[in-house]
Picture 1 (cartoon, rainbow, N blue to C red):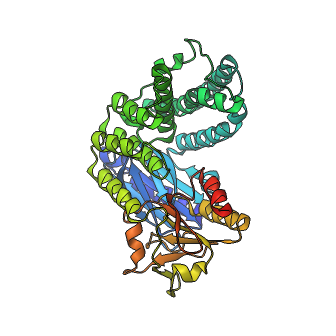
Picture 2 (cartoon, helix red, strand yellow; picture 1 turned 90 degrees about the vertical axis):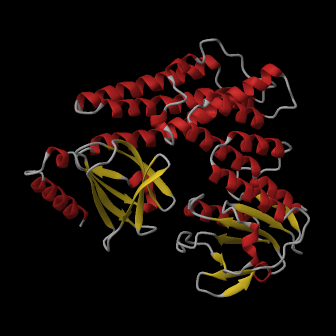
Picture 3 (cartoon, helix red, strand yellow; picture 1 turned 135 degrees about the vertical axis):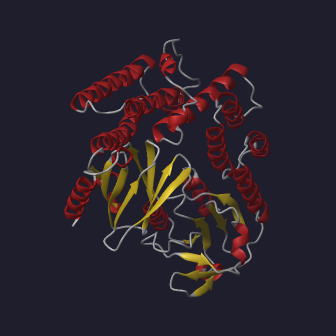
Length: 455
């Protein structure tokens, strides 16, 4: 059926092009098929702006023609998964993907598919590099930089070979390809000092030559064309954190935390307003789910620097959520409902066990990851009850393998999660709060859970 759809699509497109005007020939077609869909639509975005919602038909296909679509890099979302597509005039791109293995199964076809196949393959190679480089951070600075340099040279050669085979490739795509090659590797260079110190258990950061960071001459930390792109954003975050550690080391000021320095570094170095707001929001969300001594100072800095009123309002809600329920208070029982519509309550489900109560949405965590995470923790801690409240009422089939609960319209449980962000609450057998705000997907959660079980 997929081959038939593609054939029909290309034939119709070819026939319709015969008598088209020049502007119509520039039209962009984007379509495809989703196997095992998690919802009935795909969302197309450019940066943070939603461009279109593409609904699947009964056979899980979609197709759209755009006469006046801006050329460049787009993101398409399905469920909690996303990938990138580069769209240019006259492109007729079809995608085929299986949600059971989203990235690995993604295939492009049609005019303009070659460049997108190159891009997704490079994405997968970068993922492999992230894993393989874990064993390289114990190397000396010279050895580590040599590893990065050799890999970059290899990728540059592969790109040149691709361009020889595809001379029609535009300069805009070439610039994106080069960014996709260099920024993930430069990200590793920025991370190296901290990773090396941690892995080797050294007392101080490694001594670096003046040439170690010479690649920075070929970077632009305010590139508006790459905002939101994984390869670029990852580098910028590591660069700013590295700057923060360096500033702390230079000042030798223990009263200033890395988080404070990071916020100041963002404010000083990032001049693109929307990008600055994104970095600030991402960092403060991570900061506020942990118990840190600098929470108030970080919050005040965020409110001072951020210009996004929606972000500020959401963070104020999050702070209010934290204040509504604090450690050592007793959680009032509240009503929840199963997917089948059966009403119950938190304490009926927990049955006088220690309880992990977590609010979640597939907007923030992949359901497959959450399912595996909960099943692993439940097996490791069989005497603890895990109760998940899905705050996404529009998608009640997103977490297979879990017993999903939802809040009724009048449930008191709403007041503990007005922000909509993930929240995990640790409760004793008597409903006393042991930890009022953490995140079950946070890498430090296992330590919290071990301490909670042993108390």
